[in-house]
Length: 219
Image (cartoon, rainbow, N blue to C red; front, side, top):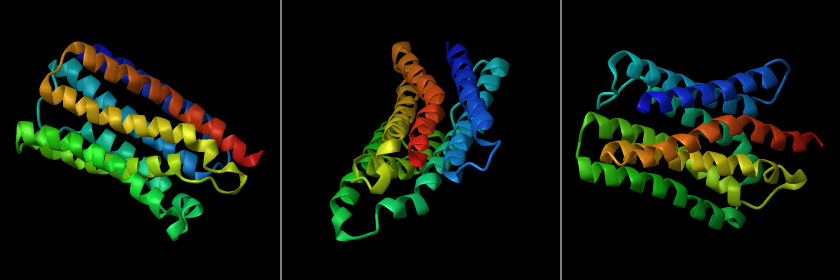
């Protein structure tokens, strides 16, 4: 079952990445959307490694493996896309947005709480440490996704145009943590199927949804 689900997820991520390459690497497109395409590409490579590992050995052993770098790299790109210039456009650091900044911490708190549940239950191990590193990167990205989802829009509807994308990215963060929990606690196959199906949908929708939003910037 894991091999089938991992293969389907790899294919979905490959389709999303391929579409992004075709649409946004021919002309002088914005770096922002290209970084999101790279995030999907990292996810694809990570899932490809897991699929090949399952195909060769029939299982994914506990502890760190190279495929985890795909998830880590994916969220590092998502974080980098929003951190800095994009965030400074919508938040000038004034008191006006203090409440929004505080509320946005709810996302990383939830992410960290999910990892803490795993750590408390399973104790210190290679797997929990590796999951912890991933959780930090996921939490960093999730903070900006929630912040840009709830913050007051700026001129020309810049943030409103990409709110659907930020919503997808936030769901992706939660689902990736849910996958860690499902695998850590060996929950029923129904849970892992749901987690993988959601991720498949997100991998396919990421770039098209963002593309639709970015187009509004130039209208």
